[in-house]
Image 1 (cartoon, rainbow, N blue to C red):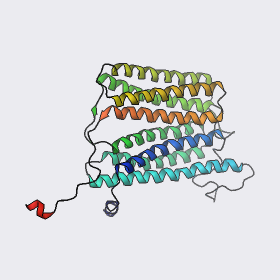
Image 2 (image 1 turned 180 degrees about the vertical axis):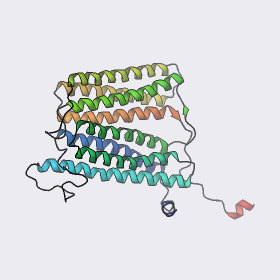
Image 3 (image 1 turned 135 degrees about the vertical axis):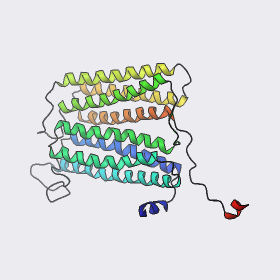
Image 4 (image 1 turned 120 degrees about the vertical axis):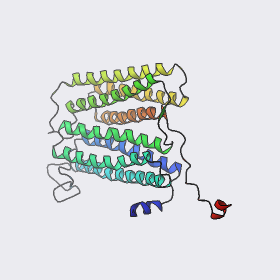
Length: 324
C-alpha cells in the first residue's frame, strides 16, 4: 500500500509527541463546541446563510444590507476553526498509524484516532443541515451532542497512547464498575436535557429562529434534577471505592470530577438566576466539555491495559549475532 509505505518513512513519534497530539485533539474537539456557542449567543448563526459557501457564489463573507459584518465574520471564523480540527485529526491518525506500523498489535489507538476525522465529517454534515434548517433548535442540539462523544473518544486516545493493548482489567470492584457505567449514562442525560433548556432559551443563534415551545423553568428543573442524580451516583461510586484497594490515581481523578461537576452546577444556577447572560452561556458550554473530559479520565483510570510498548521498535539484530 503506497500510503502505508509513505507513513512508514515518517519519524517515529516520541511519547511526548503522541500525548501532545492527543491532548490537542481533546482541546480541538471541545473548543469547536465552545466557539459554536459564541456564534449562537451573538446571534451570528446565519451570518453565513448557505453551506458550504458563506454566500451563494462566495466562500467568504460579503457585504449584505440585512446582515451585520461582525456577525458574518463570527460565523465564518467558526467555520475556519474546522480546518484546525481537521489538521489535528490528521496528525492524530498519522501518529497512531506510524506507531501501529512499528507495533502491529497497537490497533486500538489507530481506531480511536480515525474517529477524529470521521467525527469532523459528521459534524460538517450536521452543521450544514443546521444552517439549511435555519437553526431549528433541535438541529442545534444535535450539532452539539455529536461533538460530545468526540471529546470522550479524544480523552480515550490520550490514554491509549500511554498504555498497552492488553484486555482491560478493572481496578475497581464490580459494583463500582456498574456505578461508573451509570454515571456515564447520567452524564449524557444531563447533556441532552441541557440542549432542551438551550432550545427554549433566548439564544437561538438568530433573532428569527424558531424556539422550543416549552416552559424553560420546567426544562431547567429537569436539567438540574439530572445533575443531582449524576452527583448522587458519583457519591455512591466513592462510597464503594472506600472499601479499600483503590489506586491513588483513581481517587485523584474522582476528586477532579467532583470539582468540575460542582463548579458546573453552580455556574448553571448563577447563569439561570442572572437571566442567562451571553458570556456565562459559553462558559457553561466549556464546563460541559470539562465534565466530559473529567468523567472520561475517571473511566480510563479505573481500567488497566498493561504497560505501553517501547517508544520505538527495537533495531533488528545483525546476521552475525543471529548466527552466533
